[in-house]
Image (tube, rainbow, N blue to C red):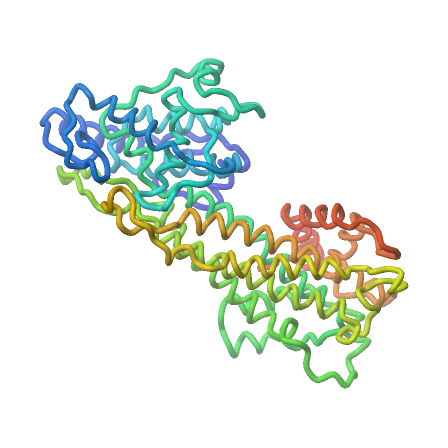
Length: 506
């Protein structure tokens, strides 16, 4: 059982969201919630106008709400704002939203009751996953529509996915013994004013990108061996003389993977002077993407410790603040940066695929086919990689530079942060497929160098791939094999195999 307090790391996020470790409020968080809620109730009794507590929302902020209608106001807010469309978010995205909203509220500056945060944690612990459409957020005032859908089941409305089935929320709550909440003053607004949809998407992207970046370095090493390319561009001196952290990490990883290479020794006296940039400059390109994603991680980690509500309730100072912490611009810019960084990994990978499949560049059979002509080999896999890379170029156009006014021009600049995060996830998925194609191509090319053995790390990964995908001796249906290779990447299996052979990769 984990405790929810003020700190929330990506490792903690993974344990709750993916591994489904139970979580409960810490005593310190409970104390903060009680103090802040007491101050909110004091404000209600004083009947002073406070945005969202006893006023309308957005452009309707000047409309005062009578005390007898404050609870109805909060219920109406959830019902009226739950107008998202599109395919539902995957369950792990919604679990992340539940955790991150509970975390932000538990910091004690939103004014909700303890019971509200505990109910969000109940949903996590019972694996009750609200059905949340993926489209409809402009990223300010936070992720209003997605969070409204996420919170409808708290009041017995909307739908929940439970035990693999989508069912009405009221029905599921009754089945698990939970009573719908009646929201009180400020609570509906506190639940939906935040950046938790985009933050959950970005957190999951960063977790998956850790594996993807290591796999990209593995793919470089395999392609270097497949093309009998030089090992020198990965020398320690390269990174020492241009000390970007990501460049250093990729050089170190590839050197490890190439250790004890018989293939390298076989061409040590060849007259080739330099390789194509997709090989020779791989540390600089992969390294830049690594550094970009490290920046994104820093932005996200700050967000995970943030209060993204409006108004902010400051019980120690006896005041509330109406401000813009719900605005998603920090995450929007970071997500666009992440998308561009991942797109470049796919872009340079596709060029290495071309190097291997083009006989004029590789010195290997055309399209790595035995009996070229009768067999097309891996020809069309490069077409697919090219298509995915081209699609990534469109997806990498930043969403964060866009804005469109909402709420009768009250909310006249918005972040489009959730769109940026969704696009970055699409780029990730495309890049995953491109790397799978590169790895399949490199494995096929390595077969033509037998009995020479590649570096220890490369050989370990090559053998694991060959357990799933046999040598291509004649044309066959390749899509299912590439899909299995994608899962080996996604699961971290190829990284695990490489690290068993050569030690930890950076």
